[in-house]
Amino acid sequence: MVFLSKPSLDDLNNLGKETMVTHLGIIFTGIGDDYLEASMPVDSRTKQPMGLLHGGANVILAETLGSLAASLTIVPEKQFVVGLEINANHLKSVREGKVIGTAKPIHLGKTTQVWEIKIKNTAGQLCCISRLTMAILDKK
Image 1 (cartoon, rainbow, N blue to C red):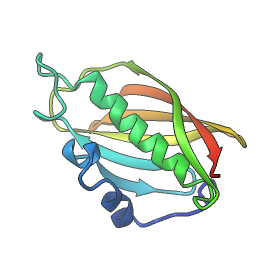
Image 2 (tube, rainbow, N blue to C red):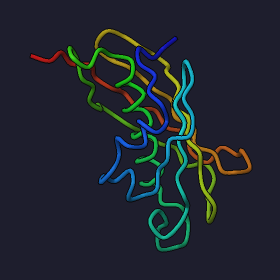
Image 3 (cartoon, helix red, strand yellow):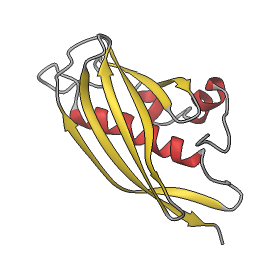
Image 4 (spheres, rainbow, N blue to C red):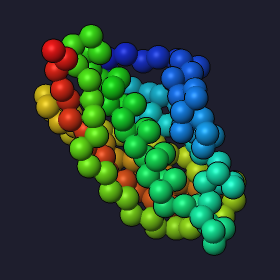
């Protein structure tokens, strides 16, 4: 099992109240032993002027998933996580509906973590793949 703590989906969804997460309509929909999943609507909040899902919205979904997943692997009384780097390859455009992102660990080290986030449309087609590197820092 990757996660040291495994909160309920209600708990995860309550963490993002009054933040960009709720503003964009991101909802956590699944958590397993080695993955975290969330959906995001493709609507006026997340589209760019050409009517397509904004690449930046994909990155926000990816960073939200990877950062929260990383925070579930540490002891929060002793450590915290911060993002170091994120990249995203936008592979397929999306005009409507929603997208579903799934974060899975690639590397879980003592000081860094690397997470892969795959974002798919409702037909299950891969639309974006992202990699997020997190730093694990000790609290002083």
